Structures are given as structure tokens and as C-alpha cells.
Image (tube, rainbow, N blue to C red):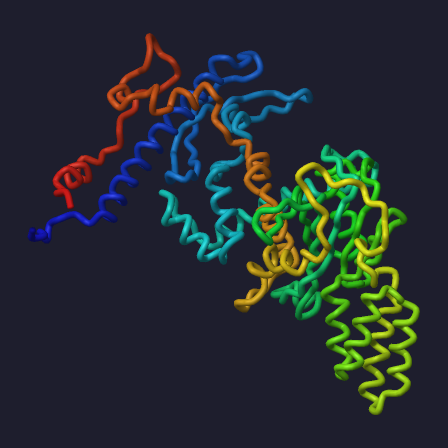
Length: 468
């Protein structure tokens, strides 16, 4: 069978249909918004709100820009000052002369968590009927990040007052902290250094088995920020208290590399464990003699910490070179300052609470993987540089994304949702195409007469296409 040159390309058919659907969707959304505005006008307090005509505005959606008109009202405050308000804007949770829908903002935020702002803007533009610039993608992330920051600060204050909103109960709570160094840019680079450590905390109550040798952490909470150790401690406590009822927690196991800001988080109820990765890496870094390495690692496993420190000091005193001696002394200082955490929590003989049903307690050390997955994969490398505020805002979204809470958080932030009544009216099952040009029902119901967009040329081209 010969293939005609006029045969349609499937991608062209798909693009044409998508364009038609976007145009129809924009028209339906315009009808719904103006109908909602008419309903508000009908049920308003006429004594308090005086109708002063209509004004046009635009909303950016996943289908493209939707222009619509809504009524403006004159009202008077208690002190006698007259102001103009839009009841529809207030009902939608927006202010100003134009805004972006919550669904479009969520798509931009989700894409920005995976790729650069420029790539995210291009991807969203290709998948929707909207044209997004990389600056617009950046602005969305900054706005959402600032709103999340307000929530985190409120949660931190509630945690200090022991009024956290968390409801999950965990007798044993695991907590891991670490940092990642990121390059700074612009004013942040001038005010700070060339790079700055972003701090990350994850907390979880156990793990479930997902494969033969694979486990997944459960009820994970994540928090990241550039701020000082003391301020970050308050922030991460707020994040934890927002998920867990910390008053019911009996033991908290803390895993970290022994940095000063990490040790500041240790309390009376905290069991500190020096990260096994950093603990063993220090031996490899400072000890070059294979026999000495083997001896030191063996003493670490034997849990005889006093003997371990004595042996390291003896190695330092008998070192043949000054460089080797200084390396042994550095290792001795590192182990001495973290001697309370050299033995892992599971080898200390604690009477641990029973794990929740279906879960197990694993050895701590998940942070090395999580710090790359949550932050490093997006924010480090590829010549990426960040301002303090810009890095913090993106990090908040990344933490929510990789704990599975980003979509719910963004939905809570954006209240631009049509009422259920209008959502039902514009559904495919209740509004057929032939009804669109006419008033639905008897009498005026708040909808202006509207027609399908003029796409006759595209429709003719689509019908003329031969099957492939």
C-alpha cells in the first residue's frame, strides 16, 4: 500500500485537538466565572454593596489565559471610608488585576523541583495552553516558598509552646541531620562567602519492606534551610511537631556527623549516634597504615571506647612523621568530642519500644542518600548558584515533594477553586455541546450567552485529514 504525502502526522492531529480542547475549556471557564459572579451579585447585601459596573480581568490557567468580566461594588467601612471591592475575587481568594490558577502554579512548582527554571517553563508551556517564561516559573516558586516559610515559622512557635498540630504517635522517633554546601550568587555571595551550608533534617518512625533487600522510610518529615543552627533547630522541631505528637515520644535517636549545630539539637531524651559513614570515613582519611586501620575499626566494633582512644593516642605518639602524628591527633579529637555517639544505638542494649505493626527499626544512616535525593540532585552541580532566599524557597518545595506532601500543601495555599455547584454544571456529562450557545434552563440564570470559539478553519483541516 502506498503512503500518500497528504496523510496526516499523528502529532499534528494531537496538537490540533489539544488546541481545540483548550479553546473550548477557556470558554467554559469564562461562562462559569461570570455565572458565579452573577450569583454573588444576586445574593449580596444590597445595602452594603452598591453595584458600580463591571471590569475585565484575566486568569492564567493550564488551558491558557481566560478573560472575563466581574462586577465591582462600592462599600463603606466602619469609619466611613468608601472602597471598591470585587466579590468574585474575594470568593476566589485572589486580589489584584490578574492572577495564576492554583493548578497552573502547582504544575510549575512540580516541574521546578525536577529541572531548572528555564526547562520547567518550557515543559509547562509545551504541555499546557499557556506561555510561561523562566522568570515566571522563578516567581511562582518564590511566592509559594514565602507562604510555606510563614507556615513553618508558625509551626515552630507552636512547637515551642507544646501545641503542635501533629497527630501521629511514635514511641521511638528517628532523626537524621546533615548539611550540603551550595554556591551563592549576587548579593548573597558578597554578604556571605562563596558557598554556604544548607542544613537538612529528616525524621521518620520506622521502615517497611518493599523488596527483597529494600526498605522505605515511613511517615517521613523533611526540613531544609540556610539559617543558623539555633534557628534551624526551631524550624525542624516545628516541622516534626506538625506531623508527630511529640508528647507521646519516649526516645528520639539522632544521627549526625558531629557538627556543632547538630550537637546543639541533643536533649536529655535524645540518643545521639555518630554517623557510621563519617565515623568510618575519618579512619580512612586520617590513617594510612592498613594494620592501624584494621585495629582501630576492630576496637570501634568492640565498643571499648576508652581503649580505642588510648590506642589512637599511642599511634600518634609513635608516628614516624609529623604529618602522620597530626592526622592521628585530628582523629583522636574527632572521636573524643563525639565519644557518646561512637556506638550505634542498636548495639547499646536499650529496651526499645515495640515497632508499629508492619514496620521495622532499621540501622540509621539514610541521610547520605536523602541529602542527594532531596537537595543535591536539584541544587548542586551544573554550575548552579543560589541566593539565600531563593535557595530556601526552592528547598521548602523539594522537602515537601520528596515526602509526598507537595500537592496537598500547594492545594491548601491556593484557594482559587470553583464552587461545587459550578464544577458540576461544566462537567461533560451535564453540559452537552449543543447547549453551549443557549441559556440553560428557564429564565436568566446568571450566564451570558456564549459560543464555541471560532475554529472552523482548524475543524475543516482536521476533518479533511485521511486516516493513517
